[in-house]
Image (cartoon, rainbow, N blue to C red):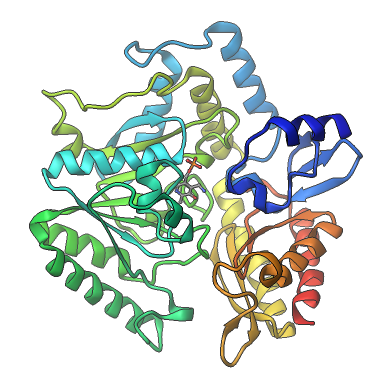
Amino acid sequence: SERILADDQEHVFRGWARQVGASSLAVVGAEGCWFWDHDGNRYLDFASQQVNMNLGHQHPRLVAAIREQAGRLCMVAPQFAVDVRGELARMIAERAPGDLDKVFFTNGGAEAVEHAVRMARLHTGRHKVLSCYRSYHGATAGALTLTGDPRRWPNEPGIPGVVHFFGPYPYRSPFHATDERQECERALAHLVEVVQLEGPGTVAAVLVETVVGTNGVLLPPDGYLAGLREICDQHGILLVCDEVMAGFGRVGEWFAVDAWGVTPDLIAFAKGVNSGYVPLGGVVVSRRVAGTFADRAYPGGLTYSGHPLACAAGVASIEVFEEDGVLDHVRRMGSEVVAPSLRAMADRHPSVGDVRGRGLMWALELVRDRGTREPLVPFNASGPAAEPMARVAAACRAEGVWPFVHMNRLHVVPPLVIREAELRRGLAAVDVALDVADS
Ligand code: PMP
């Protein structure tokens, strides 16, 4: 363990990952919803690593598919046709909403968002992109500029043409709304105003996370996404949904937009498409937008676009989802286990300000005071100011459960294949950790 950690500390250059408390852990193995370190400590992975291991660790079907593909054909450049790439693109297109039926493959989420935005700009001939505060879109220059949280700041000025607006957040309404319906109406009115002030003829795209992930599992109120669709259609703006985290089963649907019955023009995906066994992401593109590039090539490409090993894992992953009824399982675990359990915790623990989520994507928002809703730690706190949340996370880990913690929130985002008993065990650890938050 010491040797592993010595090499790591000497030579691995980390960004934000340094801050999440895992760098003193030498991970040597994993299976299903569990991973363990060199010293034999086992953790229930309640974070799915970075909310990507939807089918859990070392799934035998995915491992076998990668092995089989590696034995046959490891790599062939994107200009050639190869069976698994086409097969995965077809499988994704068949499950995507509306007329979204072409797939541009990338190596991850940030690239997917960047390409979606570039396609929107080229399709519309406009340059501005409206993106939400309290969003995360990735760590490349463009994706970070589009990001609406403090991680953007050190990267500024970033790329030109990005304008941030407020999305709905009923618990801390930026519009001083008193209920979800009002929040939805006011959020849409706000966007209409932003579009008018920016100039509708300059706006290429409105970019939203269908369900805001890292920034707090913010679900769109009913009618919000449909409202966005309408505003976009009125002004010839494209609607781009980032489903890097929310897609591929996380909320119990292939694509999260399906839960609200809305079809965007472009959907960015990654993570859950193959659980990250081999890096993969992409953009599902509508026929209309893809048509723009029918007689002039889309000016972009990646050496590893649709890497055969990644695609083989993707095909196997979709097969497992289907054969094992994963989407049904997610819906059932969410509504029958997680929702009642977290709501009961909210009744018992005064530190729980809000509970929200869907499928297996949930957040507890922790507060010092329920009345004033003062967060348990200040916005963007670090060091000693962030200690109360660090103690909550440490309490989970002491119970053998690896949590996802961000600012003043604890997210419940386990692998989608988690068994009910494991899920209850993880939730029991959260319950114990909330005692720490209460005190
Ligand atoms: N968009 C969203 C919604 C994400 O959650 C993430 C990753 N957390 C990204 C984009 C960036 O993905 P990647 O880290 O694969 O570039």
